[in-house]
Image 1 (tube, rainbow, N blue to C red):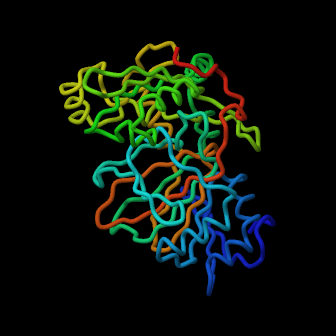
Image 2: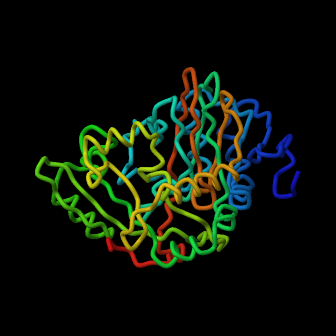
Length: 334
């Protein structure tokens, strides 16, 4: 046990290949326990990138919201959502909807936005029968493991996110931007360095360039911080990609990514990125009542395929501005 944790934390599980797990017996009010251990837990998240707390016995959204309130400074709402989440009491959200039989690859939440959560809090109310872990990967370690020439290119050029909003795949643009007013969407895009174009069918196409490598706003660590692989077309299963290309065409995919100069990112690069993530993935199966805190800049996270019912709630907290993370490229839609 490290000195950064108070003596009332009963045990620390450091099994190889898994995240740091704090085992605790918190009789009574979990929110009171969270308030007492807030500073130590937050310091541990900064130091290690993520902490799984086991033993709080969280059983409903009300209890989770009370714990989140004690551990965070401010919750934030989601803009530019990739997929529609369902709001839950206390500023919480459902987990991002995704087919249970398909993994959700490593990514940093809203890393394509100018403001993103610094802290993610996940709470498991119902653990799946098999699989379904919310795994984590250290962004600094991943960066160091990537080929130097590839990192240098992404640092120099950044990455592009290309989206075509429609009513069939992902969040429709009124839901993603929180308004059905085209003027408000256009104003948001101008203010956030997003090139936007309306389509004849009422859809919206956007293009935005962001830094792929940033520095952590507290520790200063260099981190691989993006969704280059997760939102690229080559991460999709072959049959899903072929279907989307057939329906929407290669230039109308609901989402894909590119190098910052606009050059497409090849299947080989995406496979490399996902392989490096996998090599450095730490996973721990959920148990009912678990709480996972993730530093969204320091750690990427994923969701593994699963069977059986699974209910995980999420909170997006303590917003961070990209400008405070030493971005390497100007914001824009180059």
